[in-house]
Each structure stands twice: as C-alpha cells, then as structure tokens.
Image (cartoon, rainbow, N blue to C red; front, side):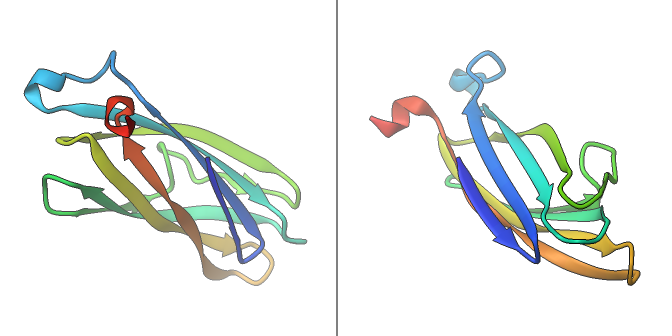
Length: 128
C-alpha cells in the first residue's frame, strides 16, 4: 500500500497480482489496483481527468489519459471518500504505475492536479 497527500487530497493505492486473469506462459501478467481518494479540503471537488505513466520492464513505457476513472467523474464533498478498482496488464512480472488526477474546485471553478504515488506491479514469485 502507498499513500500520498497533495493539494488536500489523500490518495491510497493497493495492488494485487491476479494469477486467475494472467496467462504466464503467454507473457500476460494482470494486476488490480484499488484506489481510495479522500477529500480533505474545505470545499467540494470533482475528479475530471486521469493521466497514467505505466512502466513494463519488457516494453516501452506507455501513457494513458482520459476523462474520470472507471467511467465516472465523482464529486467529493469535504471529508468524503471515493474508492474504485481497476486493472493493468503487463507483459512482464515487474512494472509500476504513477500519475496524477485533475480535479475541479467547485467553489472557484479552477482545476488542480493531485499526484498519485508510484505503485509497484510485481508478480509475487518475483519477490522471492
């Protein structure tokens, strides 16, 4: 688990290797990541956009950018949390992801970025 706080927003990420969704003999390693977003600001925010940097030790890094997360652009009041689970497939046993979310401050109608801490995507046998 990794946690970071920036711009008054706390981001916590947990990862899980999914052998049931992976095909090791074909070089497909699937990971889930669960993200918890907590608004510690005194104002309402809305997650508008995500930007990911995905590192796979056997391939070139990739970038993923898009609106919201899992098809949603959640609104969080002060003190509220939003949790979602998504996934990533690598062609190696070792990788990582990092990035940032762009939020809208609903009070001032301005956008701000919140860093997502780097989280490891490592197949458990590789840890030994």
